[in-house]
Structure formats: structure tokens, C-alpha cells
Length: 559
Image (cartoon, rainbow, N blue to C red):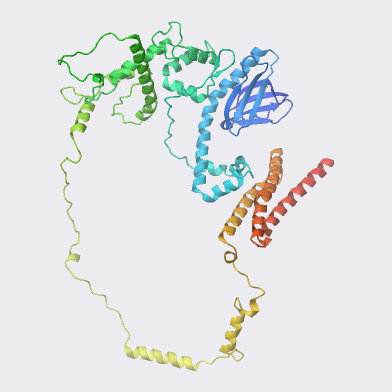
């Protein structure tokens, strides 16, 4: 088997792809399909490249699973077990549920790798320009571009040692838009992110899922009953006793009451006293304390559900931050996962004999104290301590004495140098005169009469900066492509051969999309084609190597 060195999680036989029979493998890092009587995988998709999976609708004649990738492509697998549709659906369900567990894990890895690539492009402008010239223009694929830089990506440190968890939208349930199936029914498409959000917001649903799936019901049956339940449709007044999620509703009501009692109350705010009554008690009117009507009860129920939902959304992020607090700092966020947490929140720390909560004292102190009116607390002035004070009581120290030469000694040295200079005799009998030597130098300097045929000007003085920049980009792009091309030699495997043929086509696209437009722009500016001669020689050398390899391959096949 081709995957003998990999960890295989699930193997399903009698799976068709492109009308061919084969075997579907779920491995630790990828999904692969192998045709019968073959030793290589015809289809291989890494989990990080998979966007979502789709199944064929109920009542379809074929039991199919479609894998959709991030680049828009997809692969369909037809389960054709000879034991019948029931076994086919079971095999598809096993693969689908296992992939639901694997995809979120690799999705986070893909996001981390994407952040590293974006950081590399931002920190290296030349690499970003090369990426635009090759990948965005369609000359080569992004996978080939990053394949040679994989060691650099792995060696780079992560963006931050503290991973930031994504919050949950308050409208994540309303964003699930059902689709009609044409038979007075609706269909919900649940992704792994939506299921994770439901579990994070409603721990009671997660508990029910763990208790019933897969022992009492399948994954599909559980979520069907969830969306059909009174719990999902928010009808908490007349919840049916036979509903699976009735206990969840009661659990939420209990949690809401505990959260209301456990949260620290602001002593300066009386939420319960908010009303439209403008006169206080004892001024000829009393508050209406009659029993609320049914409409008011419904409104009250809706407000309760909104408050509980918002509390759960906030607790998702607060529970993460509370773990970073020191052990001696009390956390006021209540959780609904255990009863012990609620008991701990009921006893807030008290720091005086009156039993007044510490948080209340802090809140009162903040309301009556102002930083601008606080007395200035100046610290003790710093005293200057000098270890050696003698340097502060004296003037500049005199310079140490040196040995100086007298005037007679200096004049005697000058006379000796003059006598030696006069006594020196030159032997340049064939030397040119100064006027003739100056004329010869003028003729041999650039611009002279003798230098007209071999005068070379620097590149920056002949061509504009735009042409120099474009030429540099062409050389950089070509160097990247040729590096991939020449790395394919010697051709040792089928994969290397496919890459070689692909890089040959990539070089041709480079010559058509990049080099030829640059030559056309030079022609419009009446500039000769000598700038691109070296680039064309490099391409011609690569083409000759490919032609020689192809001819050798054809000769070996004829034998």
C-alpha cells in the first residue's frame, strides 16, 4: 500500500471516483483515494486544504460524498458497497463524522501557516513583488511558490505565544439559514464551527450530545430533534415534557437565577427601580403590582432569553481571561458547567467587621474620589552623594610636559633635506615633456579621440529608473523559475517528471506574459533588444536541456 508509512485511521473499500473502483483512506493528515490494482494514490487532499464536505440528498439513487477545497475544486466519491444502500450510508456517515473531528484541528494549523506567509510578504518587499509577478499573474501556483520556502516557514517563530481565541457572534443561530427541500421540510447545513459555537454557548446541549450520540441516536437525528425542539424555538412557557431538551431549558432558568444573584451589584445603580413612575411612594399613587398579562409574560420570557444568551456569549471570552488571573483574585463570572462554581461565587470576600463586600467599597471610593483633587504626594528628595570631591574644588589640571625640538635643530633638518634633493639625479632620458604628456592623457580619457570606439557608459546613465526596475523584476522572477526547473534534474520519479513538464510550461508562460511585453515596451521607446539577450540565452539553455531529456526519454521508450 502506498500509505504504509502513514497512520491510517479508516479504510473504506468499494468506493468509486471518476467511474473507477478503488479504496478510500482517512489518514492522520490527509484523505486519499487509490484505484484498484495500483500502488499510488490518484487523489490526495490534505485536511488543511478542505473547506467543507457535502453529502447527496435523501432519496438520491447514489450515496455520494463531495469534498470541496479552498481553491474551488472538488472531488466526488460514490459508495458502492454490494451489501446495499444501508451499508453504503453507514460507511459514508463514518467517514463524514471522523472528518468533522479532524477538520477543525487542521483548520487552525492552516490559519497559523497563512499568518506566517502574510508576515513574510509584509516584511520582505522583494518577496512580495516576486509573489505578485509569479503567483497573482498566474505564471505559477501558490503551492509551488511556497514549496521551496517551507523550511523557512517552519523555522520562523509564531506570531504570538498567546493564542487569541475567536469569540462567538450573538447572532450565530440566526445566521443558520435553512433551505427548503421541496416537500414541506427544511434542511440545515451545519459546519464544525457552528456546532462548536452551539456547544460553547449552551453547555447543556453539549452534555445531551455526549449522553445520546452515538449510543441512543445518530448525529443527524440529534440535530434534527434539536432544531425541532421547543428549546431551539424559544417557547419556554409551554415546553413539552417529552422534549429531549426540556431539561436544558430548566437548566438555563436555574443558571440565569444564579448568575443574577452572583454578579456583583453596583451600589449606585438600582435596575429594579427603573419605571415610568415620576412620583415616589406616599405622594398619592402606588405602583401597579397586579399580575402581568399573558403578553407581558411573553415579553418577560423573551427578555430573559436575551439576557441569558448575552451572558453566555460574554462568558465564553471571560472564562478564557479568568484563567489568566492570579489565584488570590476572585472571579465573578458564573459558569453553568458545575454546581460547585456557583457556591463559590455566593461568598464574596469581605474585608471589614461590617461584612461589606470589597468590590462595593472600591466602587464607592471610585465615585467619590477624583484624581485631580487628590493631594500631591512628593517623595523624599534625592541627595547627591559624591565619592571624590577634590575634583570640584580645583581648576583645570595642567598638561604634562613634552620634549620639544629647538629652532636650530629644525633649521638644520630642513637644510639636510634640501641638499639631498638637489644632489639626486634622475635617469629618465626618454621621458616626454609635460605638454606632450598632458595631450596624450587627454586623448586617452573617455571622450577623447582615441576612446571613441571603446567608450562604455554605465547602465544607470543610459536607461531610466523604470526600465532598470522592470529588468530587475524580470531577472528575479526568472531566477525563481529556473531554480525550480533545474532542481528537477536528474528526473528520478514520476512526481519529479510531472513537475518538470509543468515548469517547462511555466517558463513558456513567463516568456509570453512577462518577457515579450517588456521587449515591446523597449521597442516603443526605440531601445535596442540587447537588454534581454542574456535572459533569452538562459531560457534557450533551459529549453535545450528539456528537449535533450525528452529525446533521451523517447529513445529509451523505443528500445
